[in-house]
Image (cartoon, rainbow, N blue to C red; front, side, top):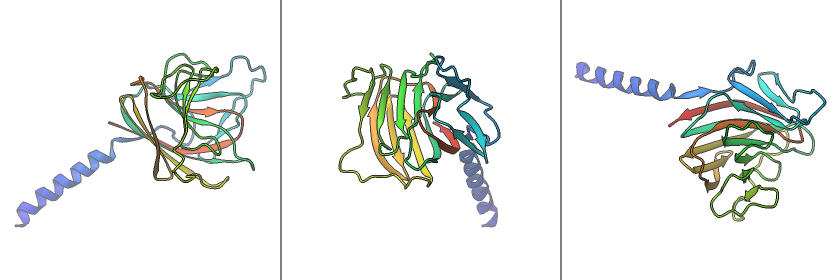
Length: 210
């Protein structure tokens, strides 16, 4: 009997190990290896809004811009944790399907990290979200459903964000709860974290490719 059980246990352990290897840390906690900074070209301050502090990405909020991955991704589950570090909360975004133009407002899909708007989508710079009509700015908004309770943790506490992207379908979960879904015509692109107006910290960014 023991000779039969041992191969089964070994196979189960091998499958577990293979599964764990699929998860890849995008931020190493030390520097921005694997990331490309994009900052507003009209900014004349010369300030870098991105730095590393205590193993986290510290985002100043000014000037506007984002950090994007060097690599383009197809289908995946992505995770990050963040907290607002000013007393009023701030604005930012976790970008998916960013296209290769490196402008301060890229073509892609934003998962809002704005205080009061966690769980909302923004179609950036002409990107399409099914059922959403863009405003004059060229941005379209898919708000979180009215019957869903506010998923945000208080200012200063960490929020956990999970985004699952398969083809043109995007699922956006906040603190373990699925909040919103959308469909877009974009099927691959960069992943990015935004600087937009106010300070926050980001940590534990990983991806599991499908």
